[in-house]
Image (tube, rainbow, N blue to C red):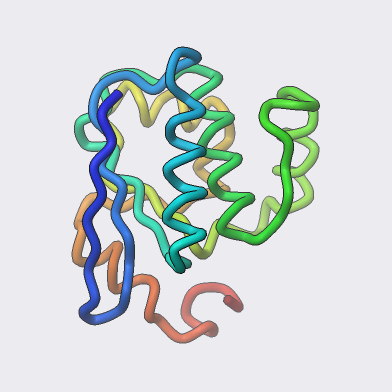
Length: 146
């Protein structure tokens, strides 16, 4: 998988990670490591551009979960606890979507895997990049109490 980074400062500062190829067991740690690096550099709002992602495995889905925990400033262990831990946490947070990580344009097959994993309730998914960027600056009342 290839990861490139871009950033927008207007209307708000948002980092965009562009993912290309397959996100799977062979490379899921690179996504987590890259997210950690940009978080350590001060990024607090992130869009994962999945428009060129051709495949995502369960390890890739777990990596997305780890990135969400990182940007929520919560500690999580890499894949420890397995799917049971994720599902338990997802049930507890079912009314709260991730406010600092949003997904952009996952292709059909990737969107299907995300849906099966229950990520439709965890992440906002956008098909318009401008709307995704602007969603970070909406007042808290408009986006569910951010």
